[in-house]
Length: 397
Image 1 (tube, one colour):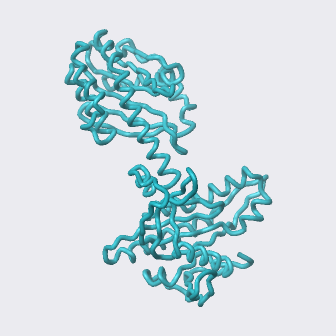
Image 2: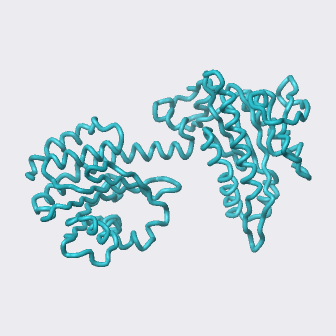
Image 3: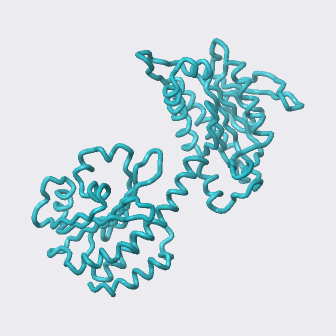
């Protein structure tokens, strides 16, 4: 392969690789164009670090005639022997390329032994040197009996700066989207990336509203160390967030020990009933998870954690609120305020799950009518309902 045969691929990258709408398409099209230039590729891996609370990095591995498989690397995996013995550890830590002709054997590197068993003959990993100084990596593997020629290796090295810039663009996009998903939720994140960033830019949405908090949090905070309080809250939220997401909800905000989530409802007939059933399923799952929750502190096992949850349905304003240059993408409106008041009533009644008349009317759950309650800030009293299978706990809420 001659260096000038790469120019069409380089031009494609410089122009923004516009034919690839997704990252897997970008990796596939890059590899296929390189093959068309004469490079005998069998397997190509792109390995990038990410800003993510659960993942240290992502990998995109292309195989000829198989396409792209996407995977992730958890925090802590970089300390495992398999990674420390891999060529990628050298690339990431030293920013140096690693070349290995596999017809000479795999040595004591498990990864080399694995790909050699699959027929690989030559391997080279090259650093992706980003503009901010961070180092990522790309590996190129062939099954050609003669491996890579020196000319092909030179072309790969020539190609890397152009590939790096485009991968950096993709990485920045994914990082921005991922951070927004983690901190404001998928729906809000998509709106922010779409340009809905002006203060006061809101829209109306019909939704089921979930508002919960942990009972007895204040005395618990006084008793535990600050680090232990954070651990307890994370464990407690782990009892709720997966169930909320799995049933179509979106977590909007953590407020100390409180959690606000919404389950959007479309205008389609019957969707409100469907959504409320999913919300109730999530509520039952969370109730069981919190009841089973324990925490070890100073040789003591803490248990019997309790929480209160208010369920309501109504219109909310969804959008940007704030002052100066600091904005928050959240939900407000009378429906959210009423859910907050109902959650307080749940504490007074020592109940876990409490529903408004609007929510209880959408799903038959064998509700128990708990009566009318005056609600601060609302002219009319609100009738609330509890689950029939729930026995009020003893003690103050």
